[in-house]
Length: 406
Ligand SMILES: *Cc1c(COP(=O)(O)O)cnc(C)c1O
Image (cartoon, rainbow, N blue to C red; front, side):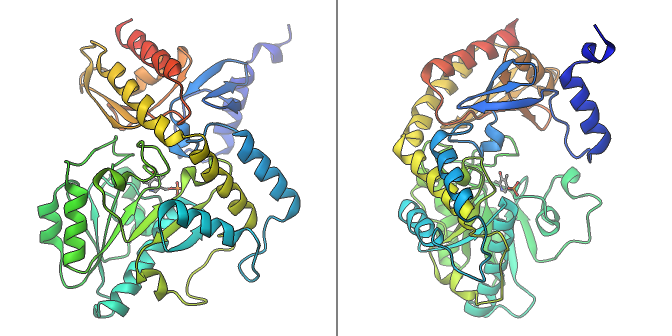
């Protein structure tokens, strides 16, 4: 055997990646080459059940055949026109997205962070035009431990030092309140408050579920004080929590709803701001845009991604199998586990601070064919594609049990 053959394919790829790439991630050392449904395969042929789903971007499962077919067909026909011209995929995309979410207007973008930035711009302009906030004084209230993306303005109102430190100066006009505390929100509202921005469940913070009634109370406060209620459903949306949008759990409707990630089933970056108010009407030609936003390829992919989500009852499946999986995980009698929490298939297992850290558990699970990722030091998020079967849920719980107790 030559020396080249003795160096693993994965090790060689990892070394090249590390040598040439920015080191802004610390991935598990598994090099994936193929995915189908809930499974992915590494370059050495090992199969894993994907319990991260690209941070909930592949809710529909890897390489869904119907989304793939839509992508192939559209890619061969027309991919990008820019918004200087119209394309025949945009209107049906708007129609289908609005019908599904009961939204009135759509602003199409690409990444999640762009949808967040767009909503911040809309909220500020709405505040000046409709609320007569003095120029340059608009305030937007955000929550501690939020995650809304990585742009300068977004990390400027992050409370995570790693996300924020070294990237200032930041745009002013953001006020932080504790998540889940309606009284703190009310106390922070001033005549200059344009909007309140929150995640219905904080994903990157470790699946933090607010107290029951919080979103309802926030909705009431925003209505009473004429403040736009912006829900970032980029991670919680599109079936992840067992309803199309997480706001449905409390029967509320945000003024602006942000979607991304699973809007394309993981094939392509597609995001959107949905509006139920006059907020969207503050934008006029030339005031905002994106070269790729609303492009025909992205629209065709998103249409297929939404269609399979509904047609294949992935949302109902997330509710049913999610409840089963959470119960099975909670039943594991492991002293390391502090709490298992979640809604639908957005589940987290938090370990005690002295239990050796979540990274070690992720590595043990990887050796057992299950891919998960730690979020912060002590929490493992378990968020498989929404097509997970009851049998696969049982298998996941068995692996976690063996990794914790073995
Ligand atoms: C992932 C995420 C974003 C950012 O999306 P990108 O596509 O990575 O820019 C924003 N908000 C939430 C809640 C997210 O989970």
